[in-house]
Image 1 (cartoon, rainbow, N blue to C red):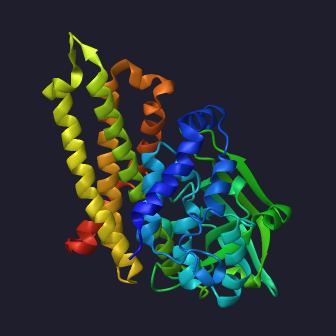
Image 2 (cartoon, rainbow, N blue to C red):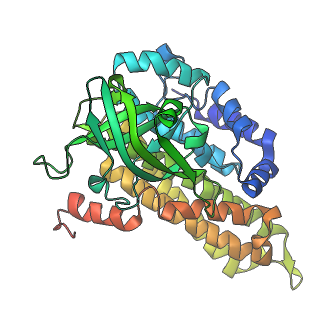
Length: 382
């Protein structure tokens, strides 16, 4: 049995070496945590899902969840490095032996970074089957044209996984057919016409817009079968939702721990504010909700690791954990009062970071729609 306690302790040690001042400074300057990501890679935590034969730890999504939960609990911004984990859902399950042998050892060692997952487009949002970016076959490769948006960490990655159409919309009977997945060398793509534009946003998530203008990529870039890439990308998306849910669990625990400690020491009207039920009850409720959401995250990760269908569980884990962490963040802001808005307490930074997951990578309304249609067999609502 894997010693998850040891994983937690080791991750915590690395995080404490940097401290929250490190993340506060990066947030202020909108900079990337290069040193932290390098240490997490060389320590073996970002390659946790890569099989041992390729230099990784060969562990499962459950252990990866432990890493990201602990990062968030320690006040770090797990969003800076989580993609290298969830893209493995696509690359490990659908990549060729040649692709794995060529790239995985270099990703594992840190020589190459795979931190970018290019799916979202400005006119499709989370309606992935409506994306327009097109890959047209040539004699020796593919020509890519289109636009992506909210693609994070692309400026800090060597490789990118891209979802594009390889058949026009409506050309095939199934609307999830006609898509293919590609593993792209970003520097080569930039030389061929890829343009990257930064997005200035409310959190330090390093997001960009991508413009593909007749960008050439070689034949061997395709992952899996042509026109059957939607299944491959969904394996990445399910891993993404479960892993982000684990980050939300860590965020929630962070907010609760901060709230409890502050409530025990802050005195107003000659008494600790933690004596007031108006402070106690919201924190206790948040604790209960985080613990419950954590069980769903564990269930979803167990199904994923077992190669079983986990779409419903991945979605529910993400929604429940995101809701619980957002409520815990709101409760922390209320507990700290005016000091919650002060950057030196770090609450407002984590508050902004966890708010993202009410919207990304999939909105709660789409999750509810999925559950209604695919779990409860209610009529499709759109």
